Image (cartoon, rainbow, N blue to C red):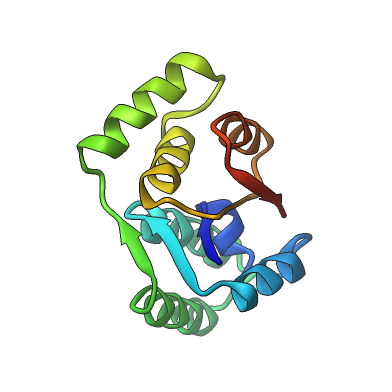
Length: 137
């Protein structure tokens, strides 16, 4: 099964919060994992907020960043090519989405995912509207 994760869902694999167990199950069941090229900066942004708020120590931040970088080396990263950009524009015109959320859904469509995993309700609704099987986490 090909599973595409938006950043909000993928981050739950590193940050313990509601939905983390569901993310682990989806990752374990996937034969291929896809994400957009924006995933690393978006997840690092979440990690940095945890470090700045002293939830994570600098050492914990570095450890989790290393885990993230190791993991993304083994998954498919969808670039912002013409099909993704055009798809995102169409999604923005049809749905109440933020630009980055539309890019995730468009990338999932271009990658031909079997399942779209996200923690964002609007994004899940837009993905379902495009015929994707969605997994809320």
